[in-house]
Length: 122
Image 1 (cartoon, one colour):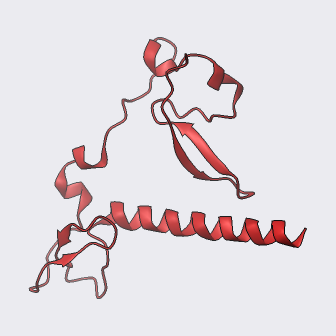
Image 2 (spheres, helix red, strand yellow):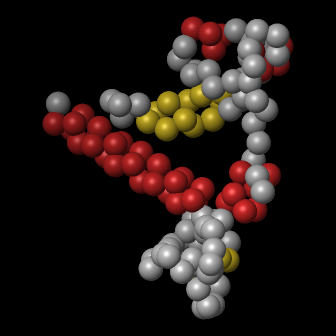
């Protein structure tokens, strides 16, 4: 057993889904994926232990202030309540992490739709 923890890793340039190990970053289709996860041995590679986004300090997850004097609004992605910074006219996400994840999901969906249209043409 390889002890890799496989998670979705986005889309390739040709629209295929990529799956990678959340510990060591090994892609599932690489030859090294058959071997034991190097994260477990810790001898050959220096990799960092994966961490949940919520373990990061709260300041790193939120937009920096000063904030507007308005009611709290829910994030469109995680439903956390947040207040918009003064510098932003529109903010739909509680911080850069949620905004980045939403952008990646939108791009992945667009690439998948394009790949599907290309397959339908063939």
